[in-house]
Structure formats: C-alpha cells, structure tokens
Amino acid sequence: GDSVTQMEGPVTLSEEAFLTINCTYTATGYPSLFWYVQYPGEGLQLLLKATKADDKGSNKGFEATYRKETTSFHLEKGSVQVSDSAVYFCALDYMNTGFQKLVFGTGTRLLVSP
Amino acid sequence: DAGVTQSPTHLIKTRGQQVTLRCSPKSGHDTVSWYQQALGQGPQFIFQYYEEEERQRGNFPDRFSGHQFPNYSSELNVNALLLGDSALYLCASSGGTWENSPLHFGNGTRLTVT
Image 1 (cartoon, rainbow over the protein chains, first blue to last red):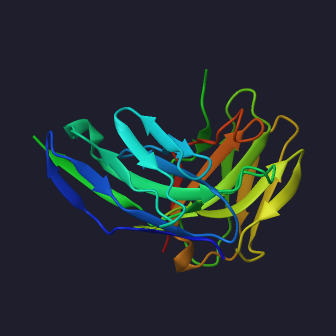
Image 2: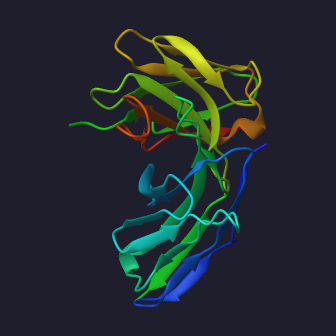
Image 3: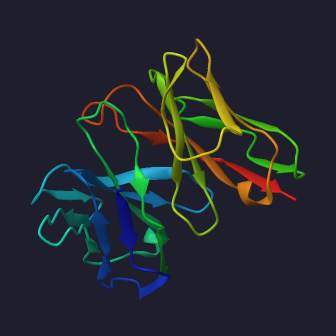
C-alpha cells in the first residue's frame, strides 16, 4: 500500500537557519503530495501542495518540489523564525478519485530558538 | 466564518465504555472525514461521510462507527474502548474536490482511555 516516510525529529535550529525536512513516499499510482503543519493545540493546516512531478509548491517562505525519480518531497525554508516551531507532516492523496483520503507520515517536530 | 468545530476538546473514559465525538463542518462543506492521531504518529484515516452515507473506510474495526446528519454535522462513535484507542481524533471537512475545496481540519478531541 501507499506510505510516507519522514525524517525523525526533533529538528532543532537557531533563528534564520536553513531548514530541510526530508520526505519520501511509496505509491501505487501518481499521487499529489502535501505538507501540513500543526501548531501546538491546533489542528492541521495545509502548508503547500504539488500535484504532479516537477511541480513546486510554495507558501510562507516554505518550498517543496515533487521529485518522481527519487520519490521525494523535501520541505525547505531559507530562514526559519521562532514562529515556525511546529510539527510538520508530509502526506499524499490521489486527486482524481473524487475522494480526499490523506496518507500521512509520522511528522517531524521543528524547534526554533531565538 | 467558523471553521471546523469539534466537541468535546478533552475526554477521559474507562476501558469497555463507549464514546461519542462530535464535529460541525466548515460553513458550505458537505463532506466530513475522521482521522485518529496517536501520540507521536501521523493521522490515520478512519472514514468519510457524504450525503449521510459512509463513503470510504480505512483499516479500523467495526467498533468505530459514524453518522452524518442532514445539516452535515457528524459523530464518531467508538464502542468497547481499549487503551490503544487513546489518541487525538481529528475531523476534517471539504466541499468538493482537492482542486476547489482542500480539507479543513478541526483542533481535535483528545481521548484518554484508562
């Protein structure tokens, strides 16, 4: 079946450091890929998505490129802020099924210190 | 515009008991999905309701059941609770497909089974 693997956390960075959170996937078809963020005490929020190979999703300074050849969708940000501290989830779904049924990774906690 | 609201926010139950969790979708949304997020894990899809019918189901036992009402709100019921059912239960709503209506998540109900 389909699955998503993320790097284990926590990832601890100083403010303004460069961020990479690795995500790879296994899929039977050609899924769309997503990054969700979960701030403390809150639900999941969609951060960005990419629907096909070589697409780049971006939002709030975060970027991720859909790499079919390496089955990866790594999340990057050039300069993190304390307010970026949260848990980040990589996920996949198939947009052409008419359903919305996300398969999530285990999440990576990011801690940014001043 | 209220987003997805879930109640209660926290709940403590004893093994063997039954529990009902509630979800009101975002205004304009007609589809409700439920996810279980165990501690330190990513959310796992339980089932999805549309037009008061269960449309898709994940790999969860029959102890997990649901309902959708004519006003699109939904309930998740879990019977014969086990310690392993302790988790954050997330409700998500949408109004169509990924292209025109991404999933919106509520803040969840934290269920503790003792």
